[in-house]
Amino acid sequence: MSSDTSEVPDLTVHSQPTVSPEACPALVLNADFRPLSYYPLSLWSWQDTIKAVFLDRVNIVSHYERTVRSPSFEMQLPSVVSLKTYIKSSRHPAFTRFNVFLRDRFVCQYCGAHEELTFDHVIPRSKGGTTTWENVVAACSACNLRKGDRLPADVHMFPARDPFQPTVNDLHHNGRHFPPNYLHESWMDYLYWDSVLEP
Ligand SMILES: [Zn+2]
Image (tube, rainbow, N blue to C red; front, side):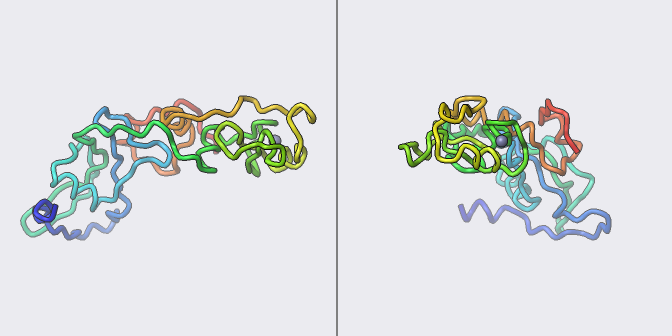
């Protein structure tokens, strides 16, 4: 590993007043040219990106106008790179609050609200409900409060979709609907936004 990194040139940033290299992250694509991750979007710093180029782990797909140089060398900063070796993502994403929201597309599963999201145990914990993919849904505070400690049938509140364990692909698919704020134009060909952005 240490012999690898010795081949990476020591790059200094030459002065271009307009764009900081810190504002030039690279979009990282898997070997199949799909982003490694949609949400968060897989981005590398320019330093990590150049290191990977010199270690021959990625191909440069597109680049910025911005250049960096060392005494012996100058290169344009990559804006899109693709891995040379395909990385198989784990089939089961982590059970986190965020991923539950992403599975449920940041929408309350009872009323469709987008605001004040929290999560709800469909079968309350007090009635034996577990904290698992199959029993937890995104819910707004109002619905959460209204449902309280009761069963869906008791309050006639049923989730829009029965909660389930999503695959990484499910979350990737949903992640496309929630793009980050900043997108470089060269990334567009690799991101398949199929929803209208809301202001
Ligand atoms: Zn609600």
